[in-house]
Amino acid sequence: QVQLVQSGAEVKKPGASVKVSCKASGYTFSRYGITWVRQAPGQGLEWMGWISGYKGNTKYAEKFQDRVSMTTDTATSTAYMELRSLRSDDTAVYFCARLLVPAAGEINWFDYWGQGTLVTASS
Amino acid sequence: DIQLTQSPSSLSASVGDGVTITCRASQSISIYLNWYQQKPGRAPNLLIYAASSLQSGVPSRFSGSGSGTDFNLTISSLQPEDFATYYCQQTYSSPGEFTFGPGTKVDSK
Image 1 (cartoon, one colour):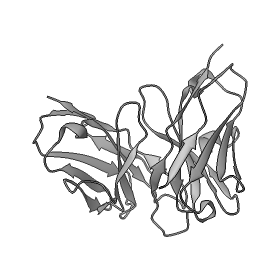
Image 2 (tube, rainbow over the protein chains, first blue to last red):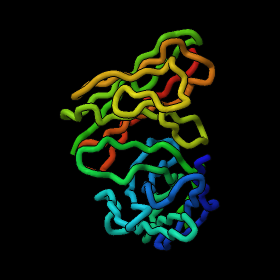
Image 3 (cartoon, chains in turn orange, brown):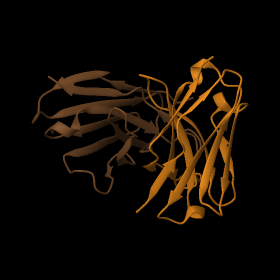
Image 4 (cartoon, each protein chain N blue to C red):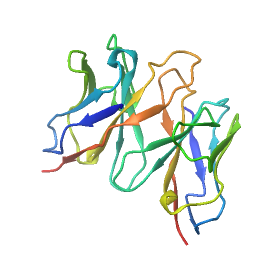
């Protein structure tokens, strides 16, 4: 069965970086992408970007363009999301999810999700 | 940018009630609209994709409708496990760009 297992909770000081992992199993990693969504405490869902599991192509939401990097390790079917220059308002649960690699004119959705990783940015 | 609004922002209902949640897009998005359910402390769960297609394993009491700018998620007979927050998501604005609505919380009356 498809599973996405994320790394554990992190506590970081403002200005630091955090790197969250998402290990996929139960499907061919290279045939799909991985997307990242975050949720601040008591707030809604915010899409951050995605990465292709095949070529590593990325697309980031404009809001995070300058501070986020998404990478993959195809040998271990693991995706990573690094967020730099953390601020207190980056405190949130970060989710990874599977999606089809987006293409023009094609409908897309997030069908399997990781369990979430709490990142706390606090001095 | 395409914006999504949801109404109501919250509602109270009883087990067995029929419930409808509306999602409105700021411009036409054809059927590029998905619905997710999220329970506290859990990851979201895909219910409906492409406006009206039921995701595998999702109970048939959930249905989606609409196209263009106005969409509905309907729960025909609310069950105890359906108390949750529901989000719509659009995937039309540009290939690989996604936006979520603000959410609708369904709680027990």
